[in-house]
Image 1: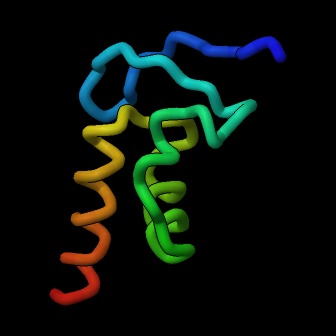
Image 2: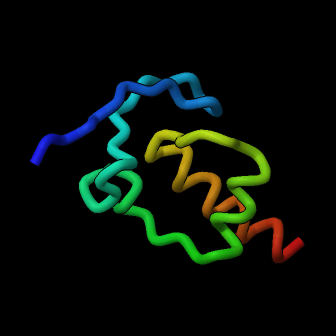
Length: 68
């Protein structure tokens, strides 16, 4: 199977990262378990993939905003 790893730049922090959204279980983002409301929150801010670090931060940010 050919892996379609794509070099991307995170729209949040500008860090370059490898994205494999075509085989999501092989992508770095699969390390973060997002609930549906967290996915919606991130999708309202960004239209493309973000790096793993930012994904973790955004997950926490979403949950903190729910508590405010």
